[in-house]
Image (cartoon, rainbow, N blue to C red; front, top):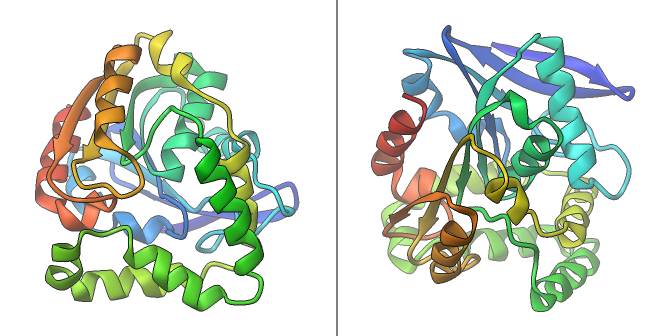
Length: 259
């Protein structure tokens, strides 16, 4: 069921379904809570699942032109406080993983387990920061073409053909993102700091799910990250969008993670 709260005079949209162990789902950049549409029905059979639209995405409004990880996490916290949730698992895809890490850093005792799905606790390298600044300039004049190009490039070449319909549906959702939301999130990611300590210094359950052909995150770096932070890691065979490219395998991993 679609619900919303007011946070700093803007609307935060979320869904709240099922009963049992609480699982919080946080989508990635240019996505929204609909990315979980095939995962939520499975998880809600035995769990209570909360899926939240991040600032500037889906049906959640923007809040300025820089959505820092702290601001993103404060919006998530507002929803969880409204629902009076004390402890929960949290699963974050890409940008959602960065937000999940910030939330865990601020409230580690509330976290039962944290899953980074096609995400990392590492900061952007210098090249990635330059690309983000460049994209924020380009998107002001050529939003649709930039989103189409960058979104499709998240998938392996085989996946672009095999999952053409699913990709078109996800792309249509991405194109609903306002330019302000794009810029604010991209700057928030560019300015984020290394968060290895959140995984390394906490005893809650930790899982990194990485794609072997991920064009954004080098899986060899994810392997090193898992060792450095004492986190479990699972590798899937495709790219950055595991919920589409490796959906069944991902579902099994997530069910095991929250068991």
